[in-house]
Length: 371
Image 1 (cartoon, one colour):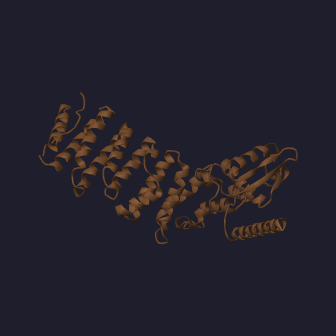
Image 2 (image 1 turned 60 degrees about the vertical axis):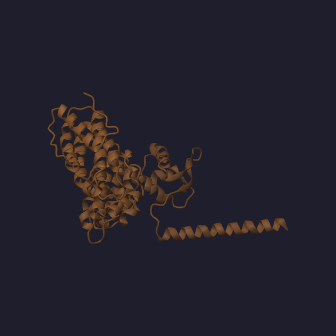
Image 3 (image 1 turned 90 degrees about the vertical axis):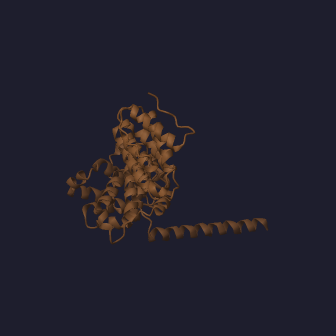
């Protein structure tokens, strides 16, 4: 049976057509004779068609209900939107996530962005995007999202709930790079007074960051209140090693806490690789070259693996340079800073001063030539 098209119909006629369609599917529909209650009953009855109806037909029916929903005053819309969101989420769980995703898009954009109950719609949208691995179809710009959350007046707990849902969806969809600033924003929303409530989030943030093969700099994490709350625990000690320690310190930590490292799901091989790369950065400092032999001895790398390690370091973008095979060394053009504190600012000031002096000398020489 085809789904009726609702074009140029009054709300009353549209409701009647929907009721007739559902009855033709042997679905019970309560007729109230009033717009709000009729739409509510249609939403309740429509839950039945998700079981054995083609996705396009479901979309047609629910989009028609949406057009009726948008006619109802916003002040009365919250209950109906909540009902519909629950239905769309259940539909996604039962194999029709792409349909739910499209309908949530239409529902979200059918109201002014400051409408308070869009908080519920957005949360459901994130949950469905996680199920369908389609977070790229949901607007996730943190600046825009912050503005919406303020408009919806959901408070700190509501904000934290959304950021947590967004983070989980991004991680499930393999968008680790996007997930990292989301988690940082979540942890930044906690204060000294409630940081203890974010313990699980803080632990997850650290372990995911350490496990991510493309994340190397962790200094910012130490400034977050929920993470400082973990100070004195093994995980915080491990994080400090990744922030400013070296491969020898990590090896000692691992030997003493092997069971702990494995219990939090971290790979010793991956940790060793990352710590060797970070130790290379420290070893280089401001040097512009380093020999294969130095890399081998300082980082405890077998001679046969040194060249592959150097290539890995360059590909990681922690180091920029080229390999001098003839002289068995690396010519370094740039290396990153693991931390940026007072010492780094002072070094930057010195370099800028030298650059200024060099420019002045060049300028004086040019003036001399012109005379």
